[in-house]
Length: 227
Length: 248
Image 1 (cartoon, chains in turn orange, cyan):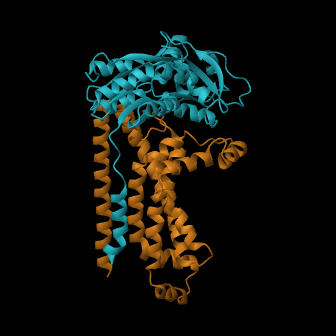
Image 2 (cartoon, helix red, strand yellow; image 1 turned 120 degrees about the vertical axis):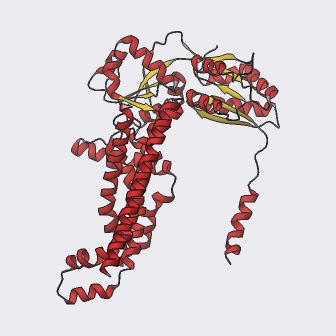
Image 3 (cartoon, helix red, strand yellow; image 1 turned 180 degrees about the vertical axis):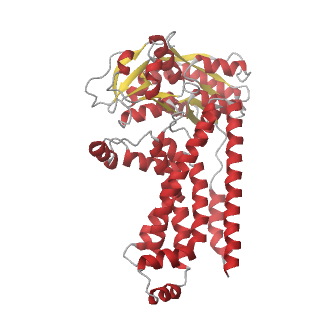
């Protein structure tokens, strides 16, 4: 059972970091795509959406080729900083973050596009700086959509399997996340272990969903109070 | 309108032909190229029969079969996995035969400056990662761990081990230079001779034997037996020899 808690802890750590990265990257990209017009805007949106539609093995292969020891980014990191990403939990974070990014920036973009620009203009006429307008007007108005996306992204990151297996491998205690531990247990016929892990995962997912419902629901009530 | 948009897709689904009744052969990953060649040759000799190949680690194939996968012939990379299949009553009596032998090797990326020459050398600082099949489901990994235990270096190496899903994944990681060494069969090394270098042969107690058998649940038992006979025939054996396997 000792190992199973390690797998759970690792999954939570990986999904947590991936969600944190996506909070910054997803909100930034969502705002950029909603508010700035530049050549290749829709192309960028499409490319960033790819991880959602591509098979995870394709994503895993792209990542392995990119950050592997002989890959352009991997070789550079190795030569410059002595960092090796493949087969580390950080590689699992990268895989999970890339796979779940569309689930954050897509709803974020839609949420930003739904914000009434007249409210922003009003804030500007009252003397707020651009940064203050974004953080005190735009972001709070778009927050519900972004939060929903972040919760989905966290769930997706928890369940990430194919790409993670390819770039992070399956090292017990280091990169063997819950989903990979379950796969290994089933593959080698350890049904008892598989059952324990599957129940554990289901319980965690139910808790996350309940928390999410409470969080979003509570916010909704809060909004109504303000209105 | 929606219907008109969807209609072509529905028609497309209907147009995909259902596959003809075929012989399903589940074979160890290390048999990938050789069994593809054997299956092609078999289909030429017996026109009208289609051989569907399913490759994975032997332990994984056994799990699939135990859970009712519709398989006609099972070829394992080790005797213990086949023995477990026999104990679970999955095999057609009298159809079990050893059809090939192999050897286990440590392979390294071609650019390795000083390739290791024995198991003890894998404990050196220059070797940071070693790819090895999950010993619970991958025979090559099981053989490797046994050899490392016998050599008394397993505990020193455990932290360097990257567990893989089958022997071909170990081979791929070595070829890509993601690991410094990997345990694969001679036949795997031959299949990727340009991208991996053989360092040394790993001693395996009792050698490495490949058994195959027809399965009790097969819907084409006669055809399954005929395929096994073909693998053991001079023509089948010649193909296996060409891929580096030795005689049973």
